[in-house]
Amino acid sequence: MEIVYWGLIYGVYQFGRGQLAIRFVDQTIDVACYHALAVINFEKRLHIFWELPIQKFFLQHSRVMWWLNRVYSYVHLPATISFLVGLYYFAITRNRSNNVPYWHNDRTKGPELYEARRRALALCNLFAFCVFSTWPCMPPRLLGESTLPGNAGDLARSLDFVDTVHARDGATSVFNTRKWTNQLAAMPSLHFGYSLLIGVSIMQYPLATSPKHYNVAPLPVRLLNVNTGSHIVPPSLPRLFCLVVGFLYPFTILVAIIATANHFILDAAAGGLICLFALRCNNFMKNLLPFEDYVLWCLRIHKPVHYTTTQREQFEESWVRQ
Image (cartoon, rainbow, N blue to C red; front, side, top):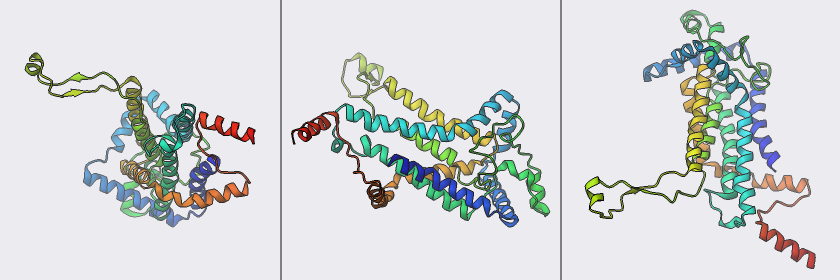
């Protein structure tokens, strides 16, 4: 069933992008360019049109830009798959080996944690497909190739964004070649949305708290040896590691998508909102449970049950006795 869900997560997204790429016409490209200019105007009103200075800064540091190109091209999909594999191990496999019963797991840990994140990834693909299929938006790197007439076209071509990923020293891959991808799907940015969902999940993963605590009461109170109950519990090393990784991963992806001129800041904001909304409302995907049962019926197999190691041994012993 994991293969079915992974196919649903990635296959639906790529199918939608491919279909839109096949149906592109000049009018669609012009509309996407107008939408990109509208995003720029809105960012200027919010005083957050920082894409050009950010890219110019990193263009002056060619070594860093070389790495950012490869982060954008090669990290997104492998990191998402690695996250799902790792979460499956920590939330399901390890709990099973530690004899934690399935029904003792709540939404913050165990199988329900993994299944919720898996549903969220599938649901955010659906939301993103609805957005970029009805509101195509050109990424900053393509504005220089705009064929729009008049002042709008002059403005688009004057912005001087550089397509660093597809340049000679870039990092093209099968995931971002123009033949297989929808080039007008900048809004929303699932690169950042996925990374934010992964980062939040890593930061919130349930771990044992540190047994240490520090008294934060004022010094005169501490000298009087009065217990005020004011103390702070420092994070354990595993928790600290999760906090650092959970912050650095989406931050790195955000820098990469802006520096390579593949997304606007508002694209990243929209991607983050969509994935956080999907994380909050992913129970909607439980409507696919009949489909899951149908797939299992077609394969002539029973739905897996999350047994602990002890439960499985007891079941096998009872089955042998019969």
